Length: 441
Ligand code: LLP
Image 1 (spheres, protein in one colour):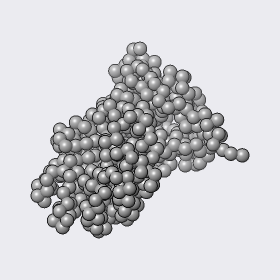
Image 2 (cartoon, rainbow, N blue to C red):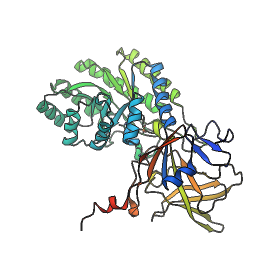
Image 3 (spheres, rainbow, N blue to C red):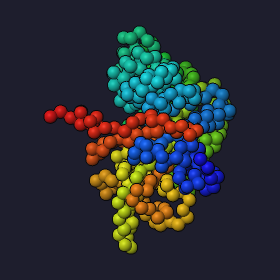
Image 4 (cartoon, helix red, strand yellow):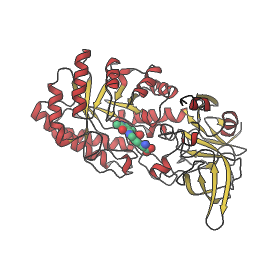
C-alpha cells in the first residue's frame, strides 16, 4: 500500500499511527479503515495498539524520570476488556478497578492482583470480599461506614489489607460539573474535617494496614494548579496527622484526570508538563513540612486510551434545511457515544474515504437515536458528503465504550485492535439474540 506523508499535522488528534492512502483512505495501524468497515460493519470502534502503548510509556517515563518511586495505574473505567487488560499488563502499569465486573476482567487477563487498586463510593460486601480474597494491592476507602465494614470482613478472613483513605481536598477544578469530584460535599471521598478521626480509627484497627492517602479531583483537567493545590492541602493534613497520631505517609495517590485534546484547536498541557509541576510541588512541600518523600501513584484513564480510539460510522440520510442547517445522519450516535449529549463534549470528524478533498461545507452530524440531543458533532466543515460515505470520529477511546447503551434496542458495536497492518477483533458486535434472551415473557 502506498502511503502519503502529507496532511496529518504533528498535532493531529487521530491515533499516532494514522496515515492516508493515495486513494484518500484513512489508515490506522497500517489498516485501511474502509476495508475494516467492509469486513466488520458499522458502527465500528478501532483501537490503535501503538497509541495505547506509547501513552503508557509516556506516563511511566515522564513521572519516573522525575520521581523514581512512581507507580502508574490505568483507570479501567475509561475502557476495559480482556485484550486491553493484557496490553496494560504487558506495559507494566497497574489497574484501578471499581466493580466486581472490572475485577473479573482483570483476573481473566491474569492481571497481577498486587498491581490492582480497588476504588468506589459504594463497594458492596461481595466486592470487598472479592478484593480481600484476591489480595488486591490497595483498597481505597471512601467513608467511615466502609472502613468499619472492611475491618470486620478482614478480621473474619484473617487477612490484613493495605488501605488508603480517599480525601476531598476542596479544590476547585475547571471542568464539567458532572466530572468534578474533589469538592467538599462530593459523593466521593472523605472531607478533611472528618478525616482526622478516620486516620486514628484506621491506625488503631489491627485488621487494616493504612499505607497512605488518595485524592482524585476530577477528570479532563487542563491545568496543573488544582493538582498543586491539592498536594499542598493533603500534605498539610498528613503532617498534622503525623504530629497528632504518629501517622507516616508511605504513599500518596493523586488520582487521574489528565486532560486530552478532543479538537485540533484545543491546547492541553503535555504529560511531562503535568509531571514536572506535580513532582516539583510534591518534593518542595515534603521538604517544607519535614516529611519523608512518599511513593507516588497516579491513575490516568482518559489520557492513556482516548486518542487510540476512532469510531467509524456509515452516512445515511442527509437533510438540508435551506438557510438553517444541513444534517448528515450516521448509523450510530448517543447509544455508542453519549458524551456529546451528556457533557456537551466537542468532537471532530473526518470523511474516512475522502481524506484528501480540500473543498468543505458546513454540516452537523446527527446520530440515529430518538432524541433531539443525539447530535455527535455540531457545525463542522467537512468535504461534501453522500450516503454511504464513512465518517470517522477521533478521540473515542475513553468513556464512550463503557457508557454505551442499547437505546432503541440497538447493538453495541464491535471493536478492532489494529497494529502494523494486522487487525484483531477484540469485541464482536452484540446480536439481537443476546439482547432478547434476557427478556422473559
Ligand atoms: N481515579 C479515580 C478514582 C477516578 O474516579 C477516575 C475517573 C480516574 C482515576 C481516571 O480519570 P481520568 O484520567 O480518566 O480523567 N465519564 C466521564 C469521566 C468520568 C471520570 C470518572 N473517574 C467522561 O466521559 O468525561
